[in-house]
Length: 327
Image (tube, rainbow, N blue to C red; front, side):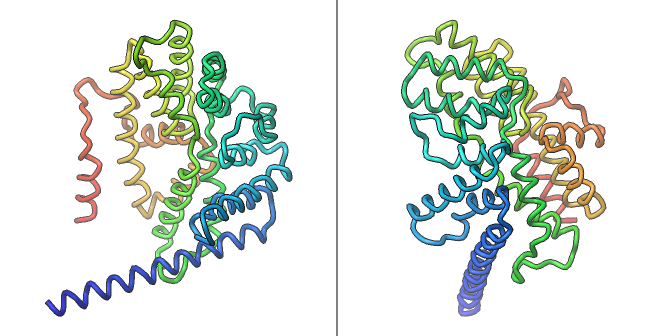
C-alpha cells in the first residue's frame, strides 16, 4: 500500500510539473507572437490567452478583444484576421467593422453569413434568418478558416520548440505533436453560429414554412458539399437532417463513412515516421481539410463512398489504435 501511495504522489507531482511547464510554454508562445508583431501573429496570440491563464476571465476577454481589434485594424484586407476578430467578439445587434470587412472581402463564402444568422436568431428575426440562410445556400463555397488557422499555427509551432518536459528527440514524433497541437488550437475557434443553423432548421411545434425549409436545404447542401473542413461538412449534414431532406439516410451514411475512414487513415499516416513529413506538407499545400481527406483516402485506395455492405462501427477506430500500439 505504501508503494502505491508513493507512486500516486509521484504521478501527481509529475502531472503538476507538466502542467506548470505547459502553462509557462503557452505564456512564452504569446510573448513570442506579440514580439513578432504581424497582424496574424497578434491574432494567434489573442486566441491563446486562455491557455496561459494570465488573470481573471473578464480580464482575459478584454485583452483578447483588444488584440483582435488591433490585428483587424492592421490587416483590413486579410479575411482570416477579420474572421477571427468577428468570431472572438461578443455578439451584438450592430454590424462590426470586421464583419463588414468580411462581407466585402469574401461575399461568396457561405460561412461568413453564419454571423448574420446568429444575430438574426438571437433577435428572433424570421425574415433575417431566412435571408442569412439564403445567402449561405447561394454561395459558391463554405470556408470556416479552420485549415488557415491550423496552418498558421503549424508554421509557427514548427519553429518554436516544445518545453523540456515534452521534448522528444524523434523528429517524426515531434512533427506529429506539433500537428496535433496546431489542429487542437485551430478547433478551439471553430465555427460560431453553426448550431444556429441547425436550430432554426429543425421543426418545433409546427412544420417549417416552405420558404424556411427551402433555405435550410440549400444552406445544408452548400455546407455538406463545399465545406473546407470536416466539422462544417458534418454541420451541413446535421442541417439537412434537421430540415428532413429526402435523402437524409444516404447523407448520414456517407458522411459517417467518410469521417470514419479518414480518421483511421489520418491517424495511421501521422503515426508512420516515413509518412508524417509528406502528410504535413500535403496539409499545408491543400489548405482544405475535406480535399486533403479525399486525397489521403484516394492514395490509400479507399473508396470515397461506402460500399454496399458497409456499416458504421464506432469502436473500429479505437480497435485499430489499440492493435497498433500493442505491436
